[in-house]
Length: 135
Image 1 (tube, rainbow, N blue to C red):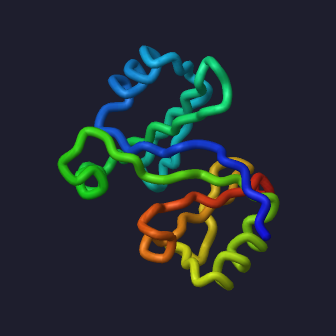
Image 2 (cartoon, rainbow, N blue to C red):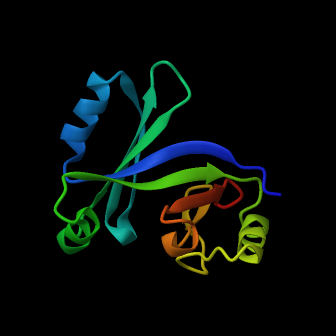
């Protein structure tokens, strides 16, 4: 059995500044900002001031990719992120249950390694499975 911990919800947005302002109005504060320049992605993590919940606001720099992912919306829930102790072991266990990943190769951002599930194998929801063993 995988020992996972809920980490955050990922939301794709058209406008990071407006989305951040909305989250601040809802009682969230800026936790961190980052980017994946090779994927033309910027992300802002917002933390609930009451603790517990984090939201990742994601903006794709490539307009065609952004438009495709948003499908005419200004924002869209993209993924549920689950931290695991070992990404490789978790992926093997998930594969044994028929769950497939969008890519065989893990992506990385600093010490974080991650993969996304294929929603057609996880009841229509995309999960980001990650650990902090990379870097």
